[in-house]
Each structure stands twice: as C-alpha cells, then as structure tokens.
Amino acid sequence: MINILMSGCNGKMGQVITRLSEQYGDLKITAGFDIFDSGRNSYPVYSNLEQCKEAIDVIIDFSNPDALENIMRFAVEKKIPIIVATTGISQNQKKLLDSASGTIPVFFSVNMSLGVNLVIDLVRKAARILESNFDIEIIEKHHNQKLDAPSGTALVIADSINSVLELKQEYVYDRHSRRKKRSKSEIGIHAVRGGTIVGEHSIIFAGNDEVIEIRHSAMSKDIFGTGALRAAKFLYRKAPGLYDMNDLIAEE
Image (cartoon, rainbow, N blue to C red; front, side, top):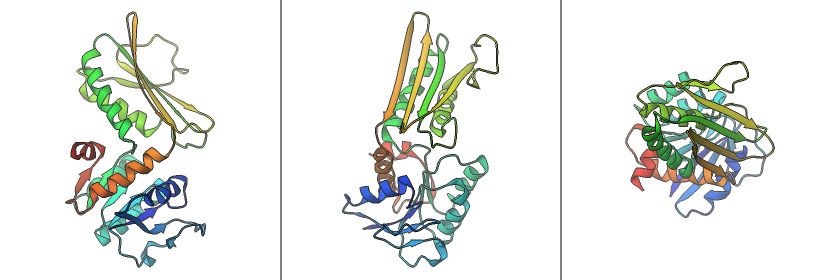
C-alpha cells in the first residue's frame, strides 16, 4: 500500500484525487494538508505539517504556489518523494524543485493529463516538419476562476515547439498593443477565460491554402487526478531525481 499525503486536499483537485483514490487497491490518502479543514475528509487534515504523525510514502501537491516552499521543505526533511502539480510557480520555485531532486525523487508537470503530454509530443514533431512554411498560434481556454494567463501548459507547448526549431521564435501574447503585420519569427499565444471550461488547448499551423490544428479538450478534472495518482505509483521507491510525464509515459 502506498500512503499519500494530499497537499491542498480541500481544493477542487484535492477532492477529485481523494474521490479517485478510493478506486485503487494499492493507494491510500492517509493524511491531508490544507490551511482549512472542511471536516469532510475521512483522513486527518493538518494545517501544520510538523503535526503529521502518519507514515507517508508519497506527497501529491495540488495547492498554491505560496505553499510550495513549505511542502518542499517538509518533503526534503522527511525524505519523501513528491509530485508537484501546482500551476503558476515561478522560475525560482522551479530551481527549488531542481535542488530538492538531488535529495528526493521530484515529479513536476504543469499538466497531469497523459493526453496533453502526447499532444505536446505530436506538436513537437509537426513543428519540426512544418517550420519554414507555417505560422504557429496557440489558443488556450479555461474557466473564469483560473488565476494565471496564459496557462502553464500553453507555455510548455510553446517551449516544446521552440526547442526543435532552427529559428527560435518570439512569444507574442495577444496583439492589441502591436499594430503591425505578423512576423515569421513569432508564436502567438492567446488566453480565453470563461464559465466552467476545464481546459482546452489548440495549436494551429497556418500555411498557404491549408491549416493543421492539433487540439486537446479536458472534459473533467478527473483526467488530471488520474494522472497524479499514476504518477504516485510511478514515483514510489524511485531514486532521487527530477521526473516528468515523459518519464511516466516511457515506462508505461
């Protein structure tokens, strides 16, 4: 049995993962960490990590960037593998993950969906082939409660495309402040916020007389929760290091 500490357990994703974990015979959420205890969980919830008495094998963090340093310090001190799925973390916080990975296994992904990560692989291949003749635009759509824009996934998609191009592209966010023609050395990135859209990413390759679009739509948050739980099974008893969805997909 893999015992999990759910960081951000009372948030939307924390509750999704709690529900989904009940379908696994080899996973169990043994404790939670959150600023507020809603009283609706079947496991103890701590607002102070130092009070956690349960034996923990893996931490899943789906909380807030402001809480990352605290949960990472706890993970390193206790030598517990951690999955960081919190979005909107800073470059300095990414360096923190990299540093911690020298001591413990750290799994980081801005999007826990297997489908999204397969799309990223497809987009990378398409960009390599279409580079000289196609303009590239990324459109992402999310619910009206999402704080960061553009999404971390949109930026990862753009970075993945740029990584295979001979001519590195500039990222242009919307175009309302630039009254001029589109250049050949840019990737347009556009954010839409509204309603209860779970998440949608479209990558458009626009050429002369033809358009290729690669698109992923999330119908529910369950896909992210399933990915996080699969990552927990993957990370359990791994050696220290920095892992991501590519490592998980390669092993499966």
